[in-house]
Image 1 (cartoon, rainbow, N blue to C red):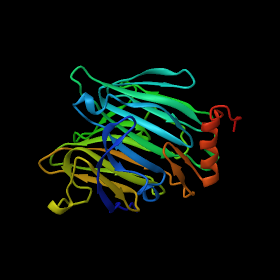
Image 2 (cartoon, helix red, strand yellow):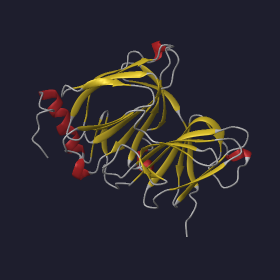
Image 3 (cartoon, helix red, strand yellow):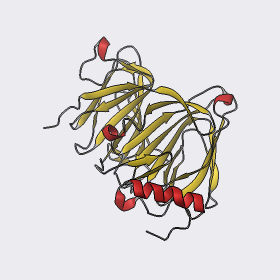
Image 4 (tube, helix red, strand yellow):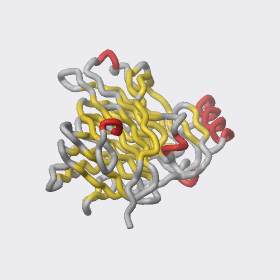
Length: 289
């Protein structure tokens, strides 16, 4: 019998800066990562002030993780040490598997009105995948399926499968689900999730509840990160407002985490080795896994 997931904890996204001075809100990060395993960090960099994001995220390395960029509005230019480059636009997503190592940059442009609305999720890689070849999966706005239920719930499926529809990002180590869900006012939406997965949500508009019955003290708002407990089902309930949220589900790794900046490994020795390679110019020349 299916079991509804209760709420283990709710967090409010905290203002911080990253990159070359990008103002953002961090929904969860290193202090929370054991709870959110395999998810390491979720950043919200929505802004209508170009001065708060234009300095961007200049050249920096990654190893041992995947970074997921999802844009609602605006553009981001990206390029990397392998010669890949392009522009990620409104409604698009990019899932980068850093694997054994890559150096890249992401430079926000915004739109014609100077608005940028985007998010970045970091997903840990298991020890067996940390030194794989770097790769990308790009999902254009048109490639991301939109499912609208009879009750008016809208679901954009970036990865995972909803009602038999599978998102364009596939074949990942933690079997993740990454969805953009909007529930209209006076509605209830129930979404099945694998019982084996860690599940969390981040509210990006409106208000509502993730309980079977809404009460004022249970309501969550824009900037709320919710960590769910064990179960099979996530239930979202709304009153007078719609509720829009990102839903993330992934297979927990339950492995040691050694994390410093943009590099996440399993041991301190592996971490030190990565930074030693950076210092000596061999980070991008390690043999194939």
